[in-house]
Image 1 (cartoon, rainbow, N blue to C red):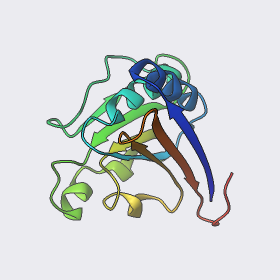
Image 2 (cartoon, one colour):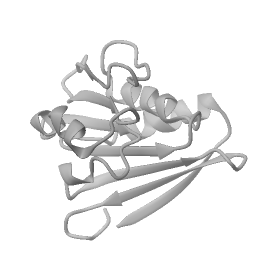
Image 3 (cartoon, rainbow, N blue to C red):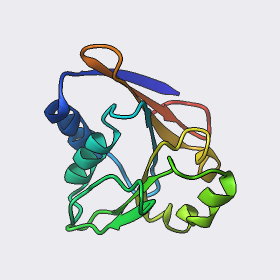
Length: 148
């Protein structure tokens, strides 16, 4: 497991960090975003989408639960999901996120404790808004137990 910590001063910096990270993500990556309400999860996801070069505006998927943003270039699609309103692991399973996992980058807001079973390898990003500047903990978890 490898970890990095970023300090983020505002929404623009959060988007910029997301864009930087989005350029590194590959098909099959599962990204689990955690943090309090208003921490910046959707803002980070917007930056990830920009870095990946996907189509369409990226907004919070809280009420539609999941959206697919098609790649505008030769990269993978982005599946952006929000598990906040899901009450059980069965509801997460009903989303069929595993059906597109190998071909897309899957970003799940509020996914901690709900989507880890989708892949032994994942990227966990925890945003802490209780400190200034906000901190973003990036943790890469590989099935082998070694960080990359």
